[in-house]
Length: 437
Image 1: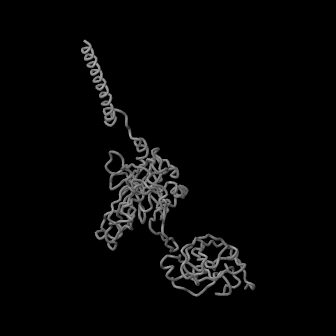
Image 2 (image 1 turned 30 degrees about the vertical axis):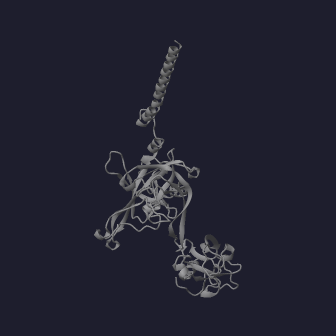
Image 3 (image 1 turned 45 degrees about the vertical axis):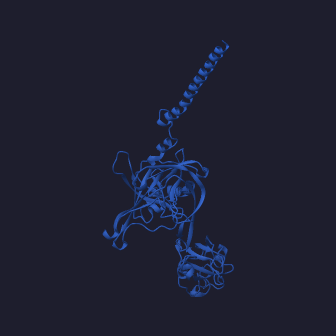
């Protein structure tokens, strides 16, 4: 009897255990099902990007660069790429063959992207509109096969920063909100909007991969002939940047413009055979705000109007050239020449050999060894050009000078100065000779 009772209890325990296992299995089975429902959309799982993308995508436009071509220019396939940053990557060059074009015919040379940053103003990369004979903004509307094209004019630009702002009269699109790129952190979600290889309003998403990346984007020759390396501080992201993305927008999840997609890394500094992906660079929007302000404050009515050595001379100074007793600066000068100028290490200009004591030049802060590169807004390349300007002025007239200052006596230097700075000065001409004629 006892044995039967024990057997009945044992069977009961086994039944209870089986039931518990079945209940547990049912609970466990419910978890994957719930996850699957979420993925399949039976439960809400909206991307955090959707709302922000909808907010800004209609404010991203295409930018077309038109240039004049003739038979002597050959084909229009673009230029070679400096290692390792390509040809600014986001910019698509045109494919017109100059040999088959009539002389001075305007053709579409390339296309990029742009972002509406103010009413009738679009920001893009400078290299997107560089050397353009005319620029158009292309507005792609859903359900419309051909884009609406509007004429645009470069209102302000910074070639070194690679930013340009276009004035587009009649543009009705809403501007985006400008963010604070200094607030970005590594790991923040961001997305790019642009027109890569003809796919309009393409969105690519990722994160901020790095901040304050110092990128050498090539060289720049200023209006005075001095060549320098251009280094910009950029935002690194793994959100894809492709040909045509240049000048578009990099946005945060609030839909605020944080950067301008500009470069895509395509090679390795360590191995030319290495494949590199997901390394793109954007110009911080905070750096571009000065260019935007300059464009907005410009006069729109003006838009679209688009060496060997010489003998030492005195710029209206001393008794040379019959200038005794006439208003002068009080400097002894010579035209700067030689390989340093030809190579772009130093700017073209007029080298100051000596500054007279008590002269207007000394009072204005001109120093020996300065290189005068501009006078009253005119670029100066020879001593005769400077004396010509000063010779037409009278006592008391103001002269605005721009000098390049190294502080190095070039006649004694064993090597050329690597550093220097441009300095703006103002002086008033005076008669400083003991005997006035």
